[in-house]
Amino acid sequence: MKRRMRKRQKLWPIAIKVLLLFLLLPLLLIASQNVARFLIRAGGIKANIVVNFNLTLEPIKPVWNSFSQGGESEQNMLAPVANQIKALSPNYIRIDHIFDHYQLVSRTAQGQLVFDFSQLDATVNSILQSGALPFFSLSYMPQVIAENGDVTGKPQDWNEWALVVQKTIEHYSGKAHFNLTNIYYEVWNEPDFFGGWELSGPKNYTTLYAYAVSGANSAQNVNSFKIGGPATTNLYKKWITSLADFVITNHLRLDFWSWHRYTTDPTQYAKDPERITDWLLPYPDLIIQPRLITEWGFDSEINPGYDGDLAAAHAVASVRQALYGYEGLFAFELVDGLDPQGQTFWGRWGLLTHPSTGNQAKPRYAAFKLLNQIDGTRLVTTGEGTWVTGFATSNDATIQLILVNYDKFAQHSEQVPVQFINLANGDYLYQLVRLGQGGNPTKKISVTQNSFATEVIMPQNSVVLLELTPTASASATPSAT
Image 1 (cartoon, rainbow, N blue to C red):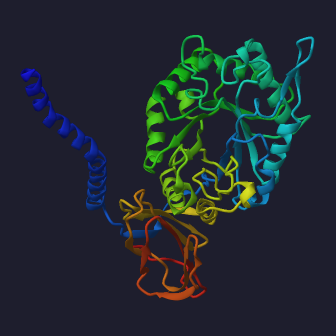
Image 2 (image 1 turned 60 degrees about the vertical axis):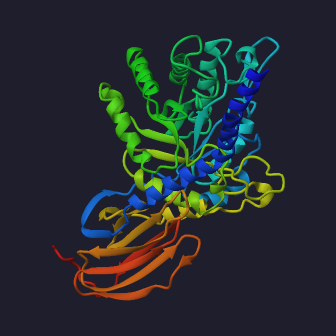
């Protein structure tokens, strides 16, 4: 008995220490996060922006103006907002769930497949009304052909899957039907997640892809279109190289590469094209194919940041990093897809709130509208910092500079020196537009030393557009220095 008492006496201090550690753990985690934030702020570089009017780069291509709409609802979410979407000058709008939500495929009593595109046609017509072209994610498996009714699984008969793809392409790219040109058909949506497809074994994505291409090749009387993938949840080397090996070995077409990217780090959008280029060096026929990020944002989960300035700043900062290396970026998503049950803002991904709340525009919507004002040829711009980044263009001597102060911790503000150099001397009209606040009054400035300098206050997660337009008094030739 005494030995047991002594053991209990020895265990009590240990138990107390464990209990204290358990109670203090949340405080330690918070402290470590604060330390991390402090180190980032302490080690960051402030911006000192210099725009050189004499040094030009490539013409700006608006890769940012394509969008995705998720499959949270079987209703046509785009019809009520077609005019609001049109204001974004969209290029393509991607939709998924086309085979399991729109009841495209049924089977007769004799077992023959029957196709009815009327429900999907309504959504496609809304896309066309918005000024965009449809981008089809060929997903998921029509239930009537799915093995065990699993819409994320294999078909009972692979040839029926090929036929579904064939009929879809003939309907929308077919000259006798919608007669659309340059439509994209993406094989599946996030196959590594939805259905747990792999690159070998009985549930092999390459088999899914091969039969989809077979169906595409069988399509008759169609305009030019593109088919590709793999539309994974991230950019994975194994998926890219395995698919490349497969299509080369089997002489299959692959017209574009696609993947999804959700990250709080905008620089990842600059790294992805470099990574996939390195992986595809052994495949010269495939390295030149267009790259598409068909869903992107800062979080794949519900996040309150999507309702405010954080999402807007992240969008502009990410576009700044993605100016090279992409055919298109598809921001996810246009409209909040699920009924918020009385809530207007609840962290969904939409640029617009749910129809039940009036399809109200969020700051990220305004950010894309602001980006669409950018045009012309890109100018060499130096002095970006850790938080404040941006890019500049010239168009008929008008200079535009968009700056963003993105901070995922929503704490950093900065007063940014901005200088335009190698300008023609003379009078200019200068305006600064703040996202969400409109533009300051235009003012006239005089350039006498071939440069103009100013300072811009950049609060946390803010976006500004600066415009400098020469008047008739500005000389035609800038300084050659």
